[in-house]
Image (tube, rainbow, N blue to C red; front, side):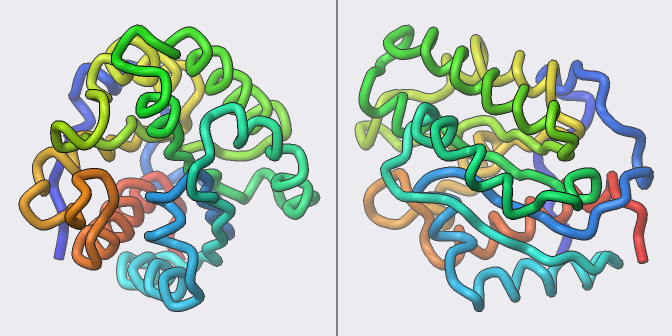
Length: 215
């Protein structure tokens, strides 16, 4: 079932993104913190993600390196080690990133921590791109009040600009989670339910596969 969320004419999509159906991708590497860990950590999660890509006409191998509690600086500090596992296949590996929620929870509300998030996230994206990987960066998910500090101003003032500058294709998990908040969330207002995990894998597959050369 197709999921229709943020359209490619949204204001966040002002970047010079890849043309549709032009990127050769064999591997998808998912990076982030607890939300991406919940969606992609188990072998069955990754097999489900691969099956969703296959149903859309693309064979890929899905990997995950996401650690609960990580802030943007944690991902940046571990990025060289993570990316080294993909040496030699950088140009056909898509790196999917959702990070920053723990920065917002710890240092928010806005503008607390915004400057550091900007520096760290830019450094992450610069390294991913400079090493020859493809990049799909997402906005930070919505958080149901009062579970955490609002993520919207961080997206508006920090993350959207970085997506436009660096990403080969955009992802908008903020809009996905805001629109689907009735079913996406577990009881804490931050992390996904089982339904939310499934919806996230489907959304990421649909939003990224349209930029790939299909089988």
